[in-house]
Image 1 (cartoon, one colour):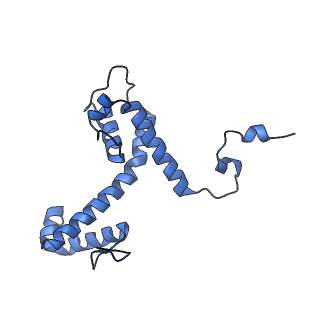
Image 2: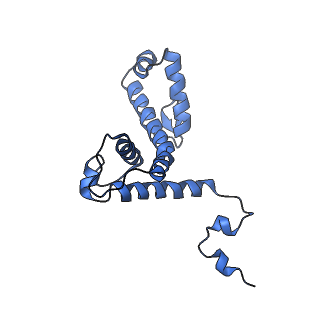
Amino acid sequence: MSFKWWYRGMSLEQQEPFAAPDPGRARAHRTYAALTRIAGRHAGDEARRRRYAHPHVLDPYEAVALVTALAAGGAELADGEEPVDQADLVAALTLVPHLRAEVDVLEAGLLRLARDRGLTWQAIGHGLGLGSAQAARQRHERLAGRVGGDPHTGTDNDGEA
């Protein structure tokens, strides 16, 4: 008896149940699926896109913000558009780690700019709502470690500023 029919339509991980799953591949697939879902359901035409998003590219921030605004009543549904459902919320939640990474890169770059323009760690700490210069410096070091920069030289790991 052949089980070939059973394997059709299954993912590689499902076909090979003893192989370790690839979390990076799974995350990339979920990210693509989340962006595709939100774009198709809530940004499928120009009028829907312009109400809250960049006119050409739906990025993770815009997708999460759009779903949040629609679900909370901050944006109105278009005629015939389905309301935000649980799958939309899960798709938006899937994108939150990407938002955190984008904010980390943005913050690390802003901290580098602030230091390059002469701001003290005390002033930076105040701007970030931190209690001390030491806390601001430690935050910069943690961010630089996460985004791949050298916190002491202000350069990327490949030596470029």
